[in-house]
Image (cartoon, rainbow, N blue to C red; front, side, top):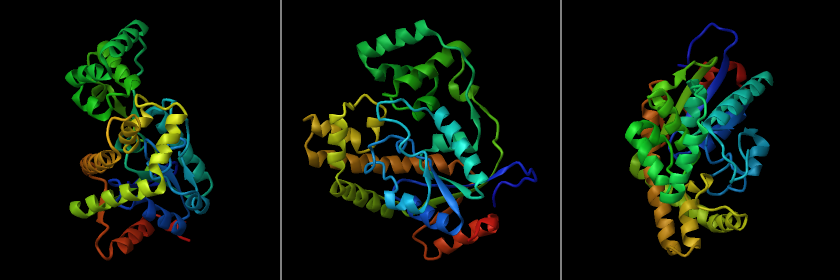
Length: 317
C-alpha cells in the first residue's frame, strides 16, 4: 500500500517507474484519464527543448488530453540540475493538488525521482572559486574524464550517478569532498517530504524488453531522430553538452561528424539503451516501497487499476 499517515497536510502522489520502453507513458495516460491525474515527467532529458523524438516525450496530442509538466523547461545548452528539478517538481505537486487532481510522477531517472520522493537535501557547502578554476583548467587540458576518475577514487557512488561530461556537477562533488572530507553521498541528508506515495514499478522479461528497445530505436529513426539531431547541431549544440549525452543524440552526433557510419550509430544506440534499461532496473530494485508488475501478464493492467483505486478512490472519475 501507499505511505500511511494521518497528517492532513500530506499530499497524495502516484509514482510510476521502470526501464525505458516498458510502457510507462501508455499506462500513465490511461491512469491519468481514469483518476484525474496530471503527469510530472521524471526524465532528466525531457526537460530540454527541441529533443522530442529521442527522449520519447508524450506527443502534443497526448499532452492536450492529459496535462504534462517539467517537459521543455530549458534550451539544450542550459545546465539543469537535480536541485532545480526537485524544486520545480514539488511546486507542480502543490499546484496539481490545489486543483483537486492527482499528481503522477512518471519516469526512469532514479536520481531525479528520489530527490522528490525521499527529500534529499544537499549540503550548504560554500564555493571555492580557485579550486573550481583549477579543476576547469585541468579538464580543459586533459579532458573531463580526468575529473570523473578523480571523483571515482573518493566517491564511487557519486561518480556512478554523474556522466563524465557533466563537468559542473562533477566539480561540485569534488568541491564538497575537499571541504568536508566526505563524499557527497554521505553528507546528503533525507528529510521526507509531506507526500503519501503509492509506487508502481513496471517490468517484463528481459528478452522481451530488449526486443522493445530495439523496436523503439527503429521507430525513432523512422520518425526522424537523425534529422532532429541535425537540427540541434545546426543550433550550435555539441557533444560536450550534458543534453547531448542522451541516448541516441551522442551516437548520431558521432555519425554526423563523420566518425562512424549510420548503421553502426544505430547499433550503438540499441546496445547502450539495453544497458541503460538494465541499470534502471537495478536502481529501482533497491526501493522496497515499489509494487512491481510484469506488464506481459494478462491481468497486470486490472491489478494496477485496482491498487490505484484502493489507494486514491477520491480521484476516480
